[in-house]
Image 1: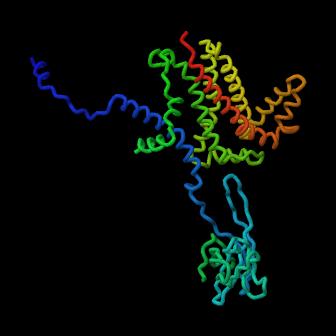
Image 2: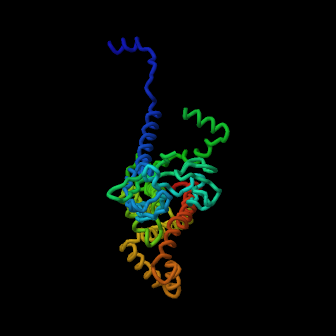
Length: 175
Length: 223
């Protein structure tokens, strides 16, 4: 009788399989986690969309005729096209555009690198950019002389058929 | 690892009795679909709650983009629906869930009615359930206006006329709901506030009372 033989040779088997209870709780937990993820993942993706969105490429904006720019910094206003979610507008921007000794044009942002006030040219009659808030001073190239930790930012600039075009803001390249 | 974290917290705060009290209860045989398949009718209350949780979550996320203002409401809904990733899904959950929660709640009410579960000692829980029903209707009514499209506007107009038809107090109720003489800017902000703060607050309080009463009184016996 083979049955009998087996009985004889029977030794307690060490079982590594999981118990029925454990299997069921894993199944239940897995199904719950799957459903919870199905509900929450779309919402999380929805919420983090702004940081995953492709940044819109900024375009060149025609600002002023080349001939109007002098060796003395001058303030020029221009409008950029801005799409802010569902709000589309053309906010006004300001740039201080100058021609240097070599005849190169450069445009500086008027935002003080100290705490973000708006700077002005030569308001203290010393041929410097001055910030009215905490007295930061900058040279014509935007180099920070006092208070501010960094030089003034610069606009990307190109000249095309007699007109100056400005692009995105970048760190100062002149100092 | 997780077990160690749990034990560490449990040693200090004794949290096991807390969740045991909430979760560790035997399901009576007559409400367990594994024993009698027809017992699935006892699931409708839980399903209503499940969808309510989805409504609260999806609603919270929708307010990240929505603006309750007559100039921007439609534009912001259009933006979140078409330009934001999964916008259609998240708004779809809130849109379809709003109808589904009413369906589930109605089925739950039918189950309670036909099993006679509203009888003593559970009359108060029936009343709380009815209050939840009206809060849900209010949430549906106020939420319907928020996208500020034609459907929303004219549905609310009809709703206001229904309110106005109430004898004596009707016109006052209408003006109070509208926040003015017309359905406009003030109606939209008012409905938004009611939809996201007042009614959800009332709903959570009522749901708490509903569940505590179930725990106190137990599930009604078999037919």
